[in-house]
Length: 264
Length: 317
Image 1 (tube, each protein chain N blue to C red):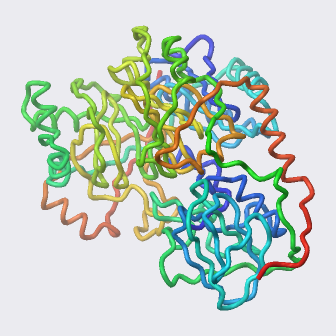
Image 2 (cartoon, rainbow over the protein chains, first blue to last red):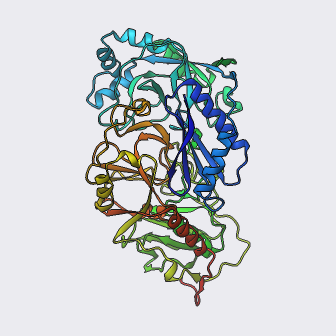
Image 3 (cartoon, one colour):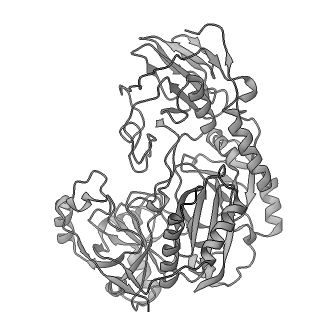
């Protein structure tokens, strides 16, 4: 659901956050991405940056060009002029191989004094780890944002799915292996770079989600694999296939289908 | 490490702005040399740098006073210095602040990464080979087509680095999540800077802040079960995240672009640079101000760079 009136929050003297809704639904996300595009197309002279997430957009503005009240008014009238969410939205489907229950995230969990995270989730939901993998890898996911870190994504299921109960780390991890797929609530997040983190770790992907040195020809036109608005399929793989892909990662052929999401 | 004033417009790709943490000291140094304000220089943390000059040039040292010496003599900061081949610059003890800046006539010549020469360590890109400087690295400066003047920043324009640290903030974002009492605690507490602080975030310890009862809206549930959890949203520079514990996390120039903890407010832009000069063990306080004051301070600060600089007699070798 989209709020009848957007809610604005002051983020200091150079940032303004606009909350557009509160359910994090597919419709709200497409609405937010449509609005973000409109904000850039309006060519506001004070616009520096935008960060769209599941319920809000943060706008970074130049306080020497406009102050908070002027930015708020401009955004409000843009929103109230109408955000036309198309019924058919172009959206690619990207297949991402994932080695669930891999040894690296297990070792990482162990170093932080925890059981393999997949076992924790299995126990919390009273099912087997195989069942957790099946449930997690079944639906298609919508990429809501990629601002967590370079090459990352935050995605949520958009086809029928079973909710996996899970909770975040009480004390965040000092590090997370790169390539780790994590889960927090209904959001699945990707740690593209070794970094601290607090989400339960599900598995690891052998492929690159970014390639700034453009070693893999797939990245010829853009160094990022995933963009907001894309859809994802997580394809379970085993250790042998993982090793094989990892060894020839710069020759890996990505499976990407062009397509549409039908919102009607 | 090598820094300029950072990059803009890459938050959606997870790339923070970066750039010199104490941008005021950085810009004043470049002004002294006649450089563009954005010319690349070196950010020195606690004096861990020794530079040997291979050619005659002009430099200036601004920011934290880490007792810079050229060969044996202590040299003044905030003024242009002529240096000759064979001379060595080192730092011999902290007097105040945390980060000093060494700026060079013409600026350092390193490749751009996303429109900036700033080092972004997390990704290992930008600056000099995407990393901190190491022994025997050789840096080059751009050509200088102007005459560098012997001059200095007047005392009245130099920032004051402690011993008391107060940051002006604007309430906003999730400040309504906190009890009225907690807002008072927030402004009266002496927050202790912890050793986990770095360019990504400054971490402060004090009393845990209390949250109001969750409103039960869907919005809360989406981010997590604790009242400090929110659906992820953008992190303004200098915004103050409040996890459930007794710690505050203030977002620095290399900080994450988004996060899922409630934010009580944001440090005003005119005070953000000072965050780069506090160090573990310092105590800081917060004071809320109005938006009008925040904008007034920002304009006052900008006019500083437009003021005349003092000419000095001769130069120091």
